[in-house]
Length: 100
Image (cartoon, rainbow, N blue to C red; front, side, top):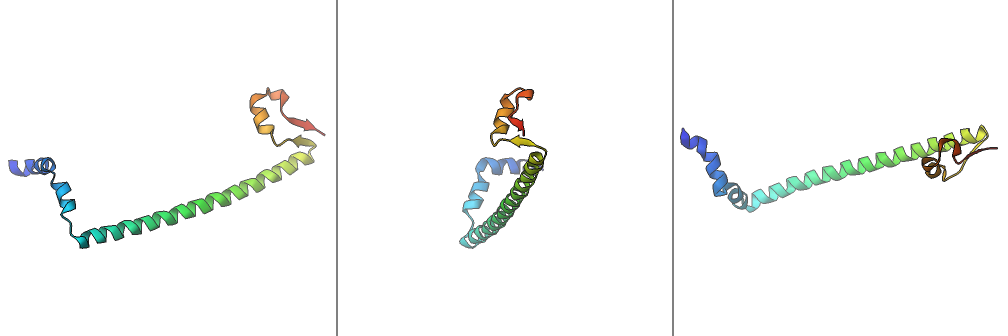
């Protein structure tokens, strides 16, 4: 019974895990390589889908921003392109927004 308990520790100490990986045959290594390549292809597909979704969302948000800018302009408020930078550093009553 003691040998069964000490066997995992003994195998770790002797490095049998490293030996078992290097002891794999060409067929096993090629199968493992094929599996890794399948996983890689799946990850690349997921990456492409995420990039496409992010670009689509960016286009939507840009369009929404342009719509808001038009509504603000219709209210007689002019917003400069650099308003965000100046509004962060300016006091609230000194924003880069001017009424027409």
